View 1 (cartoon, rainbow, N blue to C red):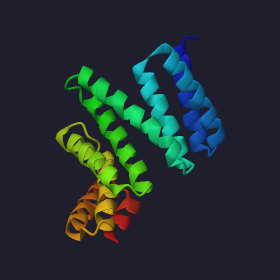
View 2 (cartoon, rainbow, N blue to C red):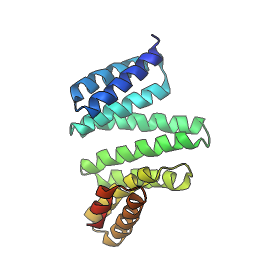
View 3 (cartoon, rainbow, N blue to C red):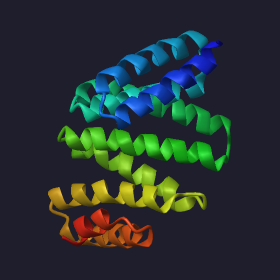
Length: 181
């Protein structure tokens, strides 16, 4: 099996392990996928491996370990987005990755570093006709939390309302309920 195929297989196996609440297995598979991606210099595999491993670390409340993975993933996503010019899907990968970096900063109590991440992600999502409604709602939600926590209640209310409406449009009742509170 070539390296690229093995990386994809490891990532798929890790996704199953994560869904089945087996983070140790997912971590092992993703650590191997990351090593293979680095060896092959495949930027897309490297990006996916970093994001997935960063998510496992984040799931385990280890933002300090997730942070460098997401920072590297953002740098790679930016490089790929520049190389693809106006490719919508590559831009959306960047938006999603930057949003997760913002989440890591927000969870660690660094709102000043989280805010530019959310602003960038929202600019990409809002300007891209291929944006998924749920992805947009999921990017607005933590930005609303940030604005709430920083005391900018007028802005927070606008964001909560927008997120609520988006969650309602895609029938995510838990999101509607949270935003309505």
